[in-house]
Amino acid sequence: RAEGVARRRAPVLRTGARPGWGSASPEEGEPCTTMDRRSGRLAALLGALLIACADCVYETEQEVVVSMNKVWPFANPTETYRYYDFPFCQPSVVMPHFMTLGQVLRGDRLVNSLYKMHFKRKVPRTVVCNRNISEKDLQLFKAAIDANYMFELFVGELPIDRPFGVKSSMDVQGGSDTHERYFLVNYLDFIIGYNDGEVVSANVTRDLNLEHLVDITEWKEGMTIQFSYSVQFAHLPHIPPSQALELQLKSTMPHGHQNMDIHWLAIINSFVLMLLILSLFLLIIIRVVRSDLSRYLQIPDEELNAVEEETGWKLLHADVFRAPKHRLFFCSAVGAGAQLFSMVVMIVLVGCIGVFYQRGAVASAGVVSYMVTAAVGGYGSAHLYQKLGGEKWAWNIFVTALMFVGPGFVIWSFLNTVAIFYGSTAAFPFPTILLIFAMWACVTFPLTVLGGIVGRHRAMKQGQNESPFPCKTNKLAREIPACRWYQSPITQMFATGFLPFSAIYIELHYIFNSVWGPRIYSLYGILLLAFSMLLLVAGTVTVLFTYFHLNAEDHRWWWRSFGSGIAVATFFYAYCIYFFLQTGMTGFLQCAFFFLYSLLVAHGLALMLGSVSFYATYLFVNYIYSRIKAE
Image (tube, rainbow, N blue to C red; front, side):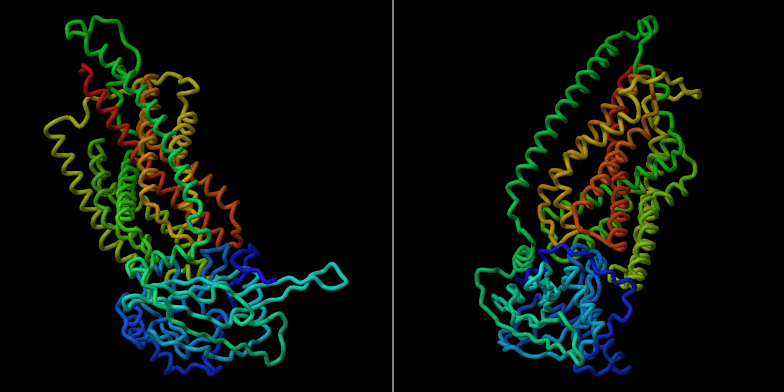
């Protein structure tokens, strides 16, 4: 009995540099002429206009555009290739369709197809071409079915994912061996739903049977495969056009939303646990700090010098605001983290208002948000750097602009080279590379410089009127006594990493299934709760351990407070490894994309949470030392 490819976990098809791919001849096997190819480039503009009309109201007999997109192994969602890289029937001229920046970044490559469709016109089973299949083409199809390859097409704006084919195993009579038979989907039965003149539903051969398949188990001389399609229209008044894309995507998600109850229960459990931890830490901090401050502030001025010498955080008033080592890089990291924090907040809030159901919408929103928040990073970095007495402010702004983009460029360059070698659509086209570089050079970097200049001048103006910190700093640093085991950096890294990570690890499962799988993430309200808990717990735990270190007469709190974000990022990357082991991802391309892009996300998470933890600690330290009576 044939089993659906989407339910299997077979080894991935190793394509290498895909020699011979794209050899599928045009319709009826006639080669394309040079003039056809040139006219195809001009006609691409018409294709862009056609695909842009997907949201318009159709009139009867108006053409509905069907676009072929990409193919990929089910277990390797990043290893994407063009649809016509496989020996399917293709038009005499392949025309690219309009795509957003986010679609290009996620590997979409929309092109025209042979499937002609007109609004409300029923099309009986019609042959689009008879494709001559070589033995090499047949082996390519069989390897793709073994690897559970899927293909994606668009009817208007509605995406449809389907498997290449199925494989069945039959017991050989009189023996223990099994005989495997391969079936390729060669008949697409379109069922299109419409309402108010718009396409609101699209389905293609959901239940496979023998009429949709052709046996490709054995190759024969002169073998041909007939590809055909049919179209039926159905009136669906219960589907409003505004919800068509959302319902279409939810209907194609594997397992749907069957585990929503478990999801909510896990989120509530994590939320309550984090509230208990947060309340406990706040109680300890408030009681201890208020007790110290009240005892200290009750001492009259004339008795201040006569009392017995105090111990603890109050002795560090002349060292606590001493500039940290490598302050240029420290301030740049804090500024870059503030920019990433602003970007994430914008994406999550926009997701709460309207979910990103459009393909590539999250990537587009991320690029735009990162560009417009560059001024935040420049301002925060330069403002802090000026307070700490830094002089190389130009280098500070430049390093801030490259703090996240620099490692990202190195990782992307390697992965893009790998994708080009494999012939994958995960490789960015050259015009897209130029566009991204132009956006960074013309928008992101100038905004970073502008924010840096404003932040520096604001800090200079504040420094003229008052001291940047509550206490003056001595020229000689105070000797730091030996610390106990619970005050060591290792203990702090573990606690400040594990506790905040426990607030988001449940939600990470759903986010990873969306990023590295076919699902569309839509629970941005829950993500906002988890993100808020992450920030609160990370800031609170960092402040608590900073107080412990100050009580131990250790004034080196700058980098330690920022290191809390690095600790959370370390746990995050460990979870990435655990998630990878639970999937069926194989092959160098997919593994490289997963681990290196996860490393880049961990780097961004370290910057963002490090910045948040630092600012929380800075406000706490500035508060307690602004209220002590010290000269």
